[in-house]
Length: 193
Image (cartoon, rainbow, N blue to C red; front, top):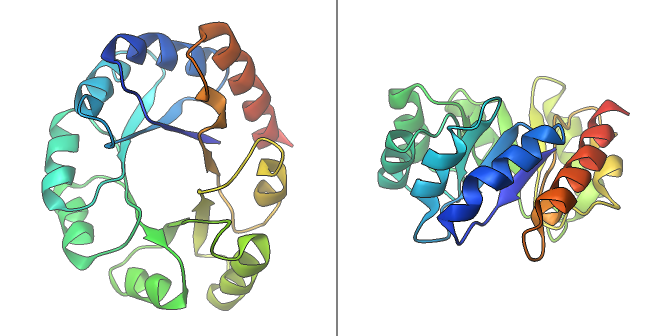
């Protein structure tokens, strides 16, 4: 389980990361959807045990800024050759979004084998991902995001080609460190089943 985080207040960055890590979720995707996202990445990266990456990376300039802020991996809603090449040039793990077989084939041509299936639910959900995965074999792995909920995450994680799922429910609502820790603990248990 990888929390997808939209953080609007830098002061929440460290306590949120601490609560997530304490609950057993250490891989954190901070989306570049807020003006303070790069600062949030810097702050969360100071939390022991947190592996912090940038999400909603749209182009090589976004990637450059995210890496300078301390991002240890990059997540994008789509796949472009310039972005994949920038990730290779920076030697940073890259999880590009794919929605169809053509996207996956372009990714394979670029030397990639790990993909974000996005938006997962509106792109046909589990049946669609099963169909896509059957074509590409077990060397291609997915992290579905977009519409995954606490109630459906285990169904997605049961698919043999799914390495993890991304979701925002763990930090939804007004920030409460104890609630986030409890939700993170529950989400971490999904990974073990």
